[in-house]
Length: 333
Image 1 (cartoon, rainbow, N blue to C red):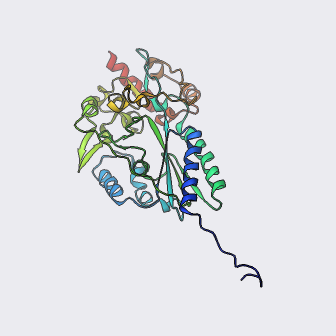
Image 2 (cartoon, rainbow, N blue to C red):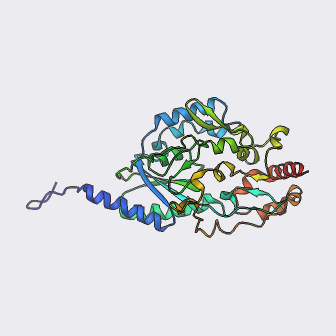
Image 3 (cartoon, one colour):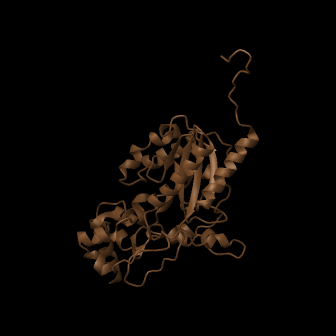
């Protein structure tokens, strides 16, 4: 109750103009941090995407990655990660860089050539989170980078960052697919952007180029059968690679970039120079000097520990990297 003779105290709700100004200030700050793509979408369940994800797992497409099914319920609603979540801010960070190892050396996927992207993207999102909290008092945020249980590609699509290609990558028509996705969930209510539009048309280059036939038509769309995918085989897979698939690694020792390398949206064009833009992030532009395949097949645990400090390649483990190197050495013979 107000004091006698004074005006009642009312809570002022920001106008649409003010909210839009806040949103654009957040976008500008995110871009100043190095994020090439920034979009906004409501933090609500995406039932169709979650249902397809469930059916993909039930069809065995996740191979033995049990954590994907364990996260199924958590991924159903962003509010499982942040109470009273209102908006998802989706960002994209370019990681495109030269990647042409000499003969006899391991092929490492571009995203893993430098420092661990989890730390790089998380650090930038932390700065963005502080900015949002200072701009909008009372806002609470949750940072999500890859390992957090959320359908990040689906939310990034609805936020306008890109559309789904046949290789299941999110493709931006102007920039291609060489970008990490980061998510900032916030309790601040901001106006959404429009979903990205686009498509592969009749192009099947990624399907034709995949050595193991991992890109398959499932239900009503193209999807990745993880058990056939070179990225899965050389990273998440903890078993021996079947002899048939081991002969098709084509030198890839950690991950695989084939389906992105052949994609027309990643090729330089005079009218779309950003499709081939190289990252300006120093962490990604300083790839490690890797041992050759023979040395990697025999690497000791202390050597491995030193070599992979701060690197995503540590994910595959010592046993896995030796296995991958030996398979590629055998293929050379």
